[in-house]
Image (tube, rainbow, N blue to C red; front, side, top):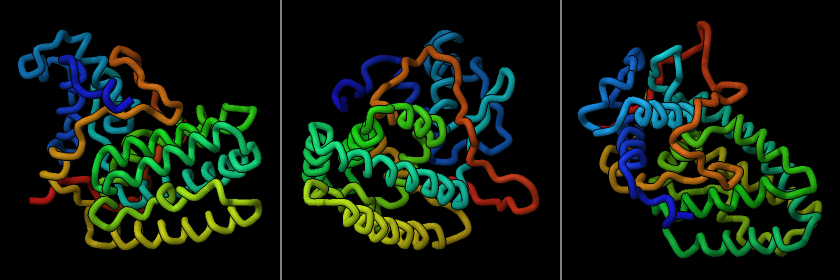
Length: 265
């Protein structure tokens, strides 16, 4: 998967470059992005540019508004809301996975073990963790939970969360579950609770570090070079229409706070 999705063509290169710029906070919240402004720098047709912008909207980096797009400014509250959703899906799917005790569990344990070959800050660790999630969310006879999770948790959430935690030791639950083959119910559920408490503490510490979510510009350039598959283990072509998530992780009303995703200087 990782080798297959390394940049090999102009649309993919444009996608990865624009994603890095969005992660770095290059565009203001009110900035409207349209196809014609990228024609010269990308060397792509308007239809190809539109496909990339639609893909970035589906992945949670852009918000589509009629014929234009604007950056999604991820806030600490949005990240925490995403973690709430992820926690529910993980608990349900781990229960299913452990009850199966078959090839899917063996594959999950294998992938979790392979993650130990890389540091948490290495993008290969992140890509392997997404493979683990795809296996986990495919557990059980009814696979619709993977489809639902994919519509509620965009790719931007996982990538931003990984970037945020990379310099904080990487306490994601997947590393802790490398010994999942030794779990038993209900002990596995108790272990999950302990793991998520650790994750919560790590996320809270990172998000309370200032008024903004800060992503280091050099890290964005060096460690965000691949387009990962989604929670269904699929990578949509860069020609599809935008599919916004079902319940957007967007703050509204007076409670909204002016936190943004930006690059450190």
